[in-house]
Length: 86
Image (cartoon, rainbow, N blue to C red):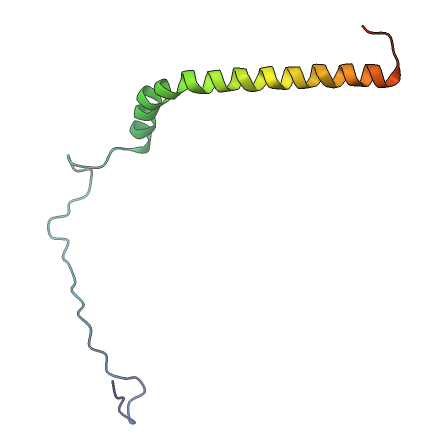
């Protein structure tokens, strides 16, 4: 693209197409996308029910491992300090 030395900017050929808002009257359309509230309501109704039991089982396993770790750590500390067992 060559620029004219007398002009400051080069001529640009664009394929710009403006659209008109003749048919826009505001408000919501009957085919509008669902709102965030409806999407989250759907998610909590269907998706979480499927995953809840798996997540609860994982949490219980994690809590059991944590409890065993704390108990074994307490036993090691008691033996290291030569304290009588509680």
